[in-house]
Amino acid sequence: MTNSMNEAIEALGAFQPTIEVIDEREIKVSVSPDKVISTLELLKSLGYSHLSLLTCIDWIDDNQFELVYILFSWKDGGKFIVSTRIDRNNPRFVTVKEIWPVARFYEREIHEFFGVKFIGNDDMRPLFLELWDDKPPLRKDFDPLEYSKKKFPGREYRKDVLGEAKKIFRGEING
Amino acid sequence: MKERTIWERIADNLRSRSIWMLHYCTGCGAVELPPSMTSRFDMERFGIMPMATPRQADILLITGYLNTKTLRRVIYTYEQMPDPKYVVGFGSCTINGGIYFDSYATVNRLDYYIPVDVYIAGCMPRPEAILEAFNYLMEKIRKGEANGWKRYKENYEWYKQNQIRSLGEVYVHDEFHE
Image (cartoon, rainbow over the protein chains, first blue to last red):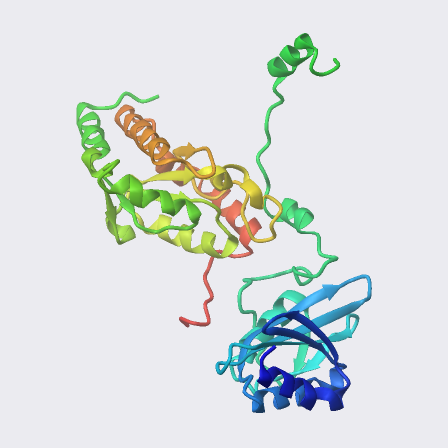
């Protein structure tokens, strides 16, 4: 851990985060949803000003979505992973597009692929999918194979009768 | 089958020796094209040349997996190309979906949407396989058997119906260009 990371962890103490050291320059900070924005603001003021990624994980057994913000420092290459868990049945969260303008595209993506609504970000048009007509595709309860069979018919192969007969003859399978 | 006139046979012979392929790479199969084009395999000795625009091209290569978003653009491109036009499908993805057979965005068989003259099996096909396929396509053109463009015209309703079934509608709405 670098010095600035130690300082940041000390400063974060007020938010009662769960801190997990992943690597020499990589720390995961889990906080409750109401403290995320202040955590992000604090880390940004301490030099972790680059939002590398904002993404979402579906924990279907816990009935929760995990929002993950990855912050990067250009001073010493440190990385903070700020994560929080929100309710899966009514997924809503506050936007961070005022802190990082680029976040509005990440939020559109998460809205499209997981169905999380970001309050304050009113631009929720589809970003990647075109004419999508099912539940958000990266949710764990979405069945891609079933959707694929419904939408994109596959090729039907004729059964290889001769090949199977040869295998039965050689004793590889039972006839 | 109708007997071909001598002029049609001459035209087919000439067509088979000057295939201009559209330089539009849809998937990962496109990485096999640079070695096929450069000095080791030297595609141009067969008269196969890359061409930048669909309006001057004869052959459309679908190199690898094709998702719904790309398929719309591919249909646009294919319909812009002048007759006669040929389609070559690369790799297992165009045949049956390949490793993306259960993806929500990847189309599973290409000949359902546009007519395919030659398929190249494998993931990825080697440059030898590509040249073999082009030789086969040239032979088919000479014999007058590579008539996917005629099939597309005759069965236009069927193709359109399949396209609309999988895509919703073929028209491209693009926020970055509108």
